[in-house]
Length: 159
Length: 159
Image (tube, rainbow over all chains, first blue to last red; front, side):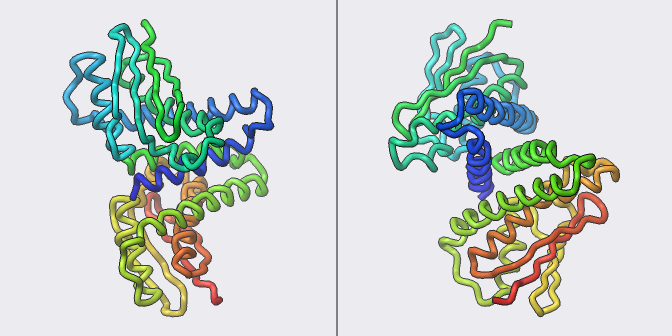
């Protein structure tokens, strides 16, 4: 049930913040709403991974970290694994979820497609925060073509 | 882990909203912050109980509902039961949690005591929303004397 309260709280948060970032509102407001959600996700991701990896073995390499994110991390938060993980072996990873749970509230019609970025910003931050705490700096963006499927693009930043 | 993300998200939410309701700010701002959190909790509570009681047997009476809230509902959200339930058998219930999880972030010092209402407003709403969806109108307030213990007072509204 905690998963459900997480989903409901996330929905409340998005609804509340989007009031300031409606389609009618200017680009600056929409950007601010998204960056607020991303920042909240970032801090939550840091806290989460800290507690979650306390008793985990250390990771072999970057790919090992990504596999952990796709399986354990994702399953615990979203009750399913990432469906597909791809990498170019040069620091770019694409995580595909064919039925992303946080998109469920807007998955009933195509008209919501432009709302999608607001529903993904928190999770982009979550990924960036989790990786950051494992010593990996990254840029994370999301891509949606057909709801409720989506892809998260992670680009590792050279340090 | 979903419990943890719920706690972290709740903390983010409180931090964000309290910026508008600092001790320095006037009473109206503090009241607004608390009522926003309460409202978000209310809607989350309605959604939660709806999914959570889908396959549950119906309840015998009001006390039966309260016992369910103290055990199943609380355990699923906060990883422990309510420690003590009291009632005057006239529509007032007092739920005591001796170690309330959402108060953990401010349980390191007495100086935070006046911050406590902001950390409890969401849960007051959660209770009111859950009860409301089960057909029980109520007023819910919280009381803290020694962190992280707290009491939730539920007063049933005659219909």
